[in-house]
Image (tube, rainbow over all chains, first blue to last red; front, side, top):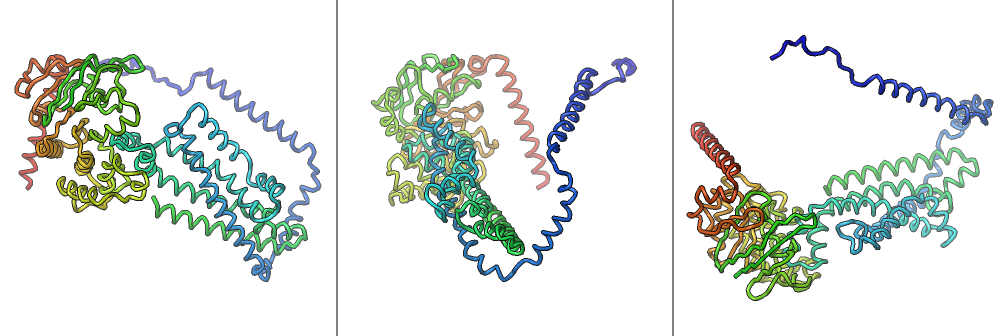
Length: 270
Length: 272
């Protein structure tokens, strides 16, 4: 045992050099922010900005009260929107499942050729927003529900495919080993060793995506792909602000309900 | 009968796990493989059903060399070999019945297995096996709802559903408590005796091996250094297998564990 006075009382979390470095870093960050702010606001017309509260109050007053008489007319487009989301999700799931199995390291038949292809499909689908898919598809297959459904499906492939292939890669390998040691065929190993392990992930991913798709499909009408977005665009164009409010409230309600449904279903499955 | 000759396994990393192992297991014999970790016990067992690819040597089950089979033939031959795993390796989200019936996968078509429409004979047999291992009341429970000992019983039933000619058993009790371990070993040896089924049991618990095995093979650094009945497993034999330092530590730990167990039992008895 040595005397306690033998040990130093001094201890610092960082060395002086790293403290200086951090401090300079923060100063540089603040300087960058100020510079960017000036760049951004160079073209701002400040008269409009100071006017903003008045404008907002003006539009706000036109938006209220929401036009309740407009609701019956919205029911069919709303139903269309829900159908776009649901059918689009189903389509996305159907296409994403094989892609996920091709992309997962432990199930891909060819890691050098098919896996990169599958990963590319996933990235391509994810990098293009549903609205842009819809724009393209309206041009290709014409305006309407079908374009919306296909747009949602194509956008969903990447999301579902990515999460599902990650779930496949995380399975317990011992269960697969045991089934293959029995003398099961490749397809049987898939259905007994792998599928039971990813079933909960599969449902939870699909329902999560359906929930997202409900939200995404509400705006697809803006580019002519059907649903409640069409009505929203029409109301915006005619400056019918009270109708816009009605539509926004309806969308909000739908999203809340879909979120509630998806959380209920997920809890029931897992 | 299983006859292994000159079996060698060198992993891609350059580690040699088995060096020319030769071993014969006659029908009805329960053989315990013991040895320190890294001695190649697990590799040896896994080479037999080719979960690990042997580098050279032959593995004769009856008159078929398992080491030289192509994929389709291997699949057919694997049906003859039942395997029981340390962590049970049940399909956790399937029911006991499905797990036991999965032992028949090698004999039913994909569509029948997908729709779970197994032949009546298989189902009858699965019921019989689940009854034999004492789980007839839990047939439709999911495997993940069971305790460790119960899961290992399902593992045994699944292996037996194959109607195998050989059982490979990889550390069957390593994840179980001492009492359950003994129950499982007893069940395993009884079942092998009933069916005259040969078994290779990879086991690291020396007292358990001595109690239940008919023959013990000691592996050290990929070579057989002991082969004989449990009664020949003397201190000096164990020192050869495990090395002086390790064996002494293991023995001490064992004694301590036994004393601690006995102590706990006494205390529990007093409370009761």
